[in-house]
Image (cartoon, rainbow, N blue to C red):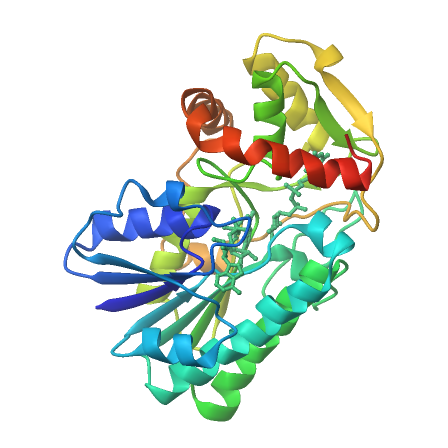
Length: 334
Ligand code: NAD
Ligand code: DAU
């Protein structure tokens, strides 16, 4: 099989390529990535010399580049996106361009060459949020109700993907995943920001009261879910992917992280809240589980392993840290 992976220099995309090349030895993977502030060639060093891997630096919004990359492709796995909610609050335009227009350019090209599968990697944020004390979980039939410009642009992209299936018969699947964590996540996101702050002897910064709830999914569990949906999922269908963490507030997660560092709550500082901050995400992955998927990675154990990864790989995140903190200097969440 020949795969076109978009956004393979980002967090989940690079972990996915690594996963796929290890598992499917004969497959060829072409990575199309613009190398935005969130794309790092340093995230591809574990596979960039693999003879089945190639890389093109390019923008998914440009039809000519996309058409070239789409030649002879069997499967598209579309990760490329602007992915950070805080950036979508300070600069929404690029989110519509990349996440909506970019997805449409890819869909048009995929249709022309008649790919066997277009897999769209999406997020649980398209469903909006739940009250903090809610017992409900998002399911595949939950109505879309995105709140941030990021979530709205991802919701629009999901609708476009489904429209290309219904109108043109493009064989698509979609996964809507929970908050991923693991190696090679940019230090602007909560978990790597918290860990790298502590390595630098700076407190974790918690938005608002720290009572927002997220569901945490180890990145390799999202990769295996995408794999299963591509290989066994039903065309035209959507699958929700939740992680193994129990219900944890951001404060709970921060307490766990300071604990792993042998520190106490003095290393947690409360800062200005995010505007329109989603309260709670919770996911019901029953549909995916009927295909035989289970999250394998226990939260506490893999949080600890993730901390170890950032401790051992300071070369990877140090060059990115100042840029991430500049964002928070602008937003006042420092
Ligand atoms: P990321 O920000 O780490 O990486 C995004 C990648 O896309 C980068 O390599 C960037 O250079 C590339 N890119 C951005 N604009 C591009 C363009 N115009 N053309 C080509 N490449 C471009 O993102 P991530 O956290 O790895 O998320 C990947 C996908 O998974 C996104 O679609 C996101 O919405 C979705 N998702 C993320 C999470 C999460 O917790 N991180 C959870 C669920 C779903
Ligand atoms: O749910 C899936 C989504 O998870 C993905 O679609 C997004 O691409 C991904 O960025 C993530 O979105 P969140 O906004 O949930 O993730 P973030 O890491 O930015 O924040 C996680 C929580 O932590 C959120 O409640 C905001 C809070 N936070 C964040 C940062 C950066 C803090 O309290 N302090 C911080 O420094």
